[in-house]
Length: 401
Image 1 (cartoon, rainbow, N blue to C red):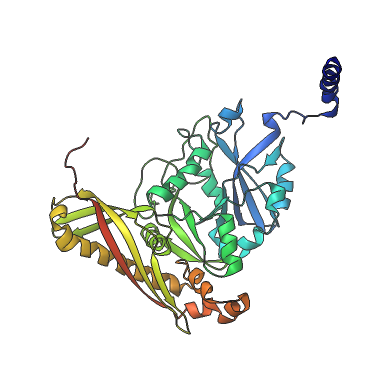
Image 2: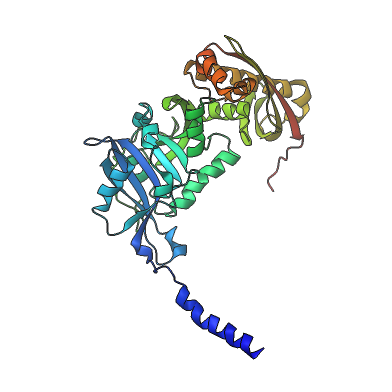
């Protein structure tokens, strides 16, 4: 017994000699990148902007310490990082990148896919990083995120996910999904589109960076005047045809696409008639039912089930008129909107409703699918849509709780 205890003691004494640890790294040794913006360059192919967190005194305060933007040109991301490092007292760290932004000028030429061909493992950027297309310059958009009242940039970025879940007006598309769309050819990507409202006064404070963006009193947020808040906003979506930006659609049309392709969770719709305005919260009631026949002119029949809750009733008649009028009215309205949006995106040769993902299942081999040339057939495709809306709460309260 004593011998075993002596052997154990010797092992414990020798164990530290065979182990090691990593050198401690100070928080200010890295500059943590939250977003990467890609614009057209002047001397190089790309002008790359990096949205960085300002260093805090601890890991906990890091995400709330504000942000600033740096940039460098390069023919690829590695060259831009190398140039940026030449003037930085720290190393850029990409492990916290949540968003990759591309200007509409870059995305419309197909160079977006060209830029994305770097090693994400080497850069330690996650494949789950989300994509954004910016109308104008990404550098301006990133500067427009500065806020004295809300310095936590990471928190503001995650608010986009809440918008996707509760409003149903943007499609959160990550890098992996975009690559799948480009490489498989079975659908086309739908990416949130950002813009800057130059009528909003830049917010200044200890955590904000002075911006060079001019004030334009005539500017708006999607055609509507807004006061306060961030200059940068999301209210549209970018449609892709393969790797190329094909066009833009507004928030209402995005909601319709999400319903048709099965990515809708929750949203809103408003109807107006002689009795007043009725607003509904819409909630997905299951997957869309799609029947697709192929040929030289494919045809799809799409049925979408939804739940509805009444959130606004200015005429105080919605409950009584639901079965006799409103149910058919909202179902017809949504079906007509889906058909209108389908024709609009088909004209842009964008399969954002993802019919190709159902068409490919009817082929036994990749060669047969390739020979069918789906995107060529898609130009002649037709579709009809139907919607069933079930009222989940038939009581609307007229008083605030």
